[in-house]
Each structure stands twice: as C-alpha cells, then as structure tokens.
Length: 304
Image (cartoon, rainbow, N blue to C red; front, side, top):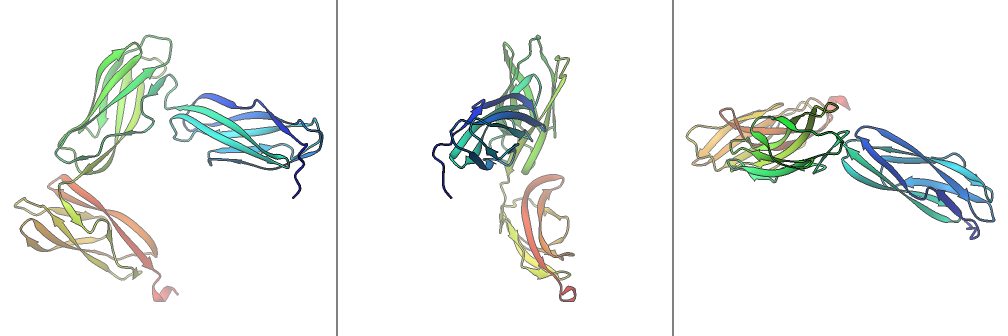
C-alpha cells in the first residue's frame, strides 16, 4: 500500500484529560481530527491499548483541510487511581498517538491511598498490619466515626489526622482463618454527601500445615465415573482429626502416621469440562487451610 508522505493529521485537543470520575461509568469525549496536509488522507484503523477504551471516527476519508470527529469512550470499571491510555489512529500517512487520562475514584470527595488494598501475606497464628490513608478532597470540615470490618478478625482503627488526611491501621488478628479472603471495611464519616465509605481488603493467610499435592489435580475421567487421589496433610500435631470439606465430593481418612494424615478424595463429575473447587481443612470450626481441587471430565460413551 502506498503511503502519501504529504498528508498529515492533527488532533484537537492533542491529549485528553477526563478528570475525576466514579467507578462503573462510561466517560465520553470528542476529538477533532483534521487533514492538515495537501493531499487526501484515509484513516485506516483506530485502536486503543486497553479494552476499556474505544474510539470511532465519523469519517474515514478526509480531503485537505477537512475535519472529522473522533468519538472516544473510556469505561472506568472497577479501576481506582490514575488511568493512562493511548488511542492510536493509523492513517495513510502514518500513525497519530492520542494520550487519554482519567482519575477513577471509589468516592466523590475521598481518595484511598491504595488502589487495591492487599495485606502482606502472613501465616495463621500471626498478626499482619497495613496502614492506609483516606484523604478528603471536599471543602467542608469532616471527621471519621465508627469503623467496622466483616469478618471481624480484621480490625481497622483511625490512628491520626493531618489536615484532611486520616490514617487508618488495618490489623489481621492472629486467630484469622487460613485461606484467601476479602474483608469489607466500612467507615462512617461526618460528610453529609458520603456518610459511609466502603472498601475491600484482600487477605492471604497460609497455614502451618503442608498439604501435598497442592493443588490437587484429579485424573481425567468420563462423566459419571469417580476420580480419586490421595492427599497428605503434614504437621497435624493435634490429638483429634481434622475435618475436611469438599462441596462436590467426598473425603476419607485412610491412615495416620504421627503428624502425617493420609486422605482419599473422590469426585464424580456430572458434566463434561473443567471443574475447580476448594478443599477446606478445619479444626473444629476454625479453618486451617484450603487448597484447590481440579478435575477435568470427558463426555461419557453414551453421550457420543
């Protein structure tokens, strides 16, 4: 394909700043594209570096001096913080890159210090802490009230305030169960527009137990046939036995050698395809560990 080196394209504005926007919104904007060259120009394609951003020109062929509108849409989705995207306009004269920026916030007048709040991974029986900051961007004088967490083994406490910035200490208690958890934190404020702020905290807690294999990959079977595999729990120093739960399967203790316990797990698939679920290990009502169990089933001979 020949490229007309005399054709040029100009964007007005040359960069987009869509300002502060809430999550879950589609933000629209327009850019004027002009053929600033002396020869006709064709817009071959318009692409973006993320699926959250789309752009479409009203016209694809421009005479010298002619303009068209490039309609741009950015989905804020569940992002948080500053997003930087690039829209690339490929023309018969080369490529134009248009920077697009938007600041996505959970709240209208508050900023959270971390876009994703993840406590440092820890072991069951040990505490884990993380400081976060809430910054009020409005004009009123505000204060924080009660802070609650669900589940309650994570605590959140306001520790200090500097102007409109509030420091909060997140503490995972030592008795928190093992596993990968999402904790909901709710902060009450005196802000009349946003009296309650809610955010998620992701917590990963490993067990002192060691389970092999991990993950548990069951042998491939046909629909309706049982798949079985042995799982060994190492480091169980209690007198009693743990309770193992598998929602779509069964678990049976076959042998105990001191602190090593042998279990046989069985799953019988009801449909073809992959299936993943969690094997949970409890001491009483306390969750000690959880590991994924993976099974792939093929269609039965009768289904063929």
